[in-house]
Length: 65
Image 1 (tube, rainbow, N blue to C red):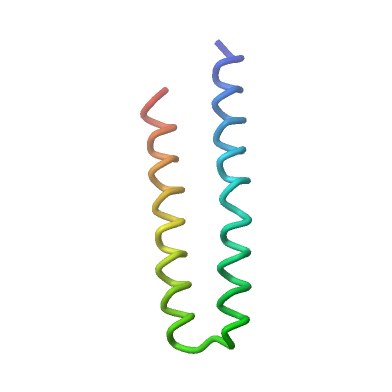
Image 2 (cartoon, helix red, strand yellow):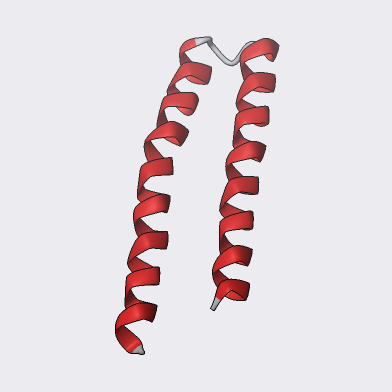
């Protein structure tokens, strides 16, 4: 039973690792846009959607077990 749980942890970790480059790319794009209101608004939208995906995956992980 521990092997299945460990596999799920690794799956969740891999998903988080794949989302991290997106955050860096969006951050870099906002900074490259010199933090004008349009780039900050776009970054805020992306940031909120990223955290929504992370939150949903955490809930799925908790309730799926």
